[in-house]
Image (cartoon, rainbow, N blue to C red):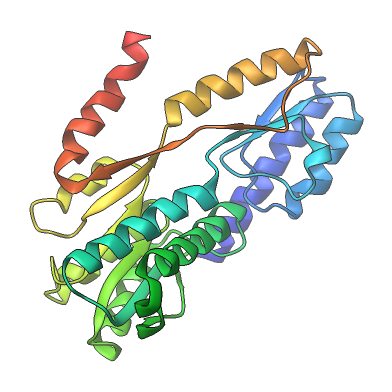
Length: 266
């Protein structure tokens, strides 16, 4: 629910204030709201503490040293491209498309949303005009909300052919539960974001067709290195991009095992 999101924001802002009070050498943060955190990060910067953002960014790039993470517009483009290619292979040239996210105020979610639509329309070509994009479902990471709302959209739009979930456990679970409850497994294609063991519950049943995955390990290692360099006064690029990987449903289990083994092998 929204109050939970507000509590998370306040908790993270509290971390920033604590870092300033304790004279931290540097701070790394994934800001949940680009505008709300912008002023707070500026205060940390003005206190002489370098800030590295990751996963999501603040509104003003001048307030942080660098951003480490995925270009979420590009990640969305991969999803949109794969979704369009999937439908074209099936000979599907029209229908409704659903989008399920936690919210639409995080830069991460907005960029993914825009990237999906941009590349879908490009890859689909003239037929893109035959598809109807439904109002995005926003569940504040509550799977029961996205499940109920997607069930409603499926009933109201029997021509639904594709659903994109933009990341986080709420949308991931909510979408798969809705497809299952409505008997639409394998009939409505589902493309999602980021590896989670949750996906493994839906593979055999045809509740997920493919995901784009952020390389969380590389992002984490990049954040630590960037923070160390910033503390040492080194000049860093404004953005340190980490590319996404495309993973088909049948490869998700093996991909997850490989991800779990990465830290031990480094």
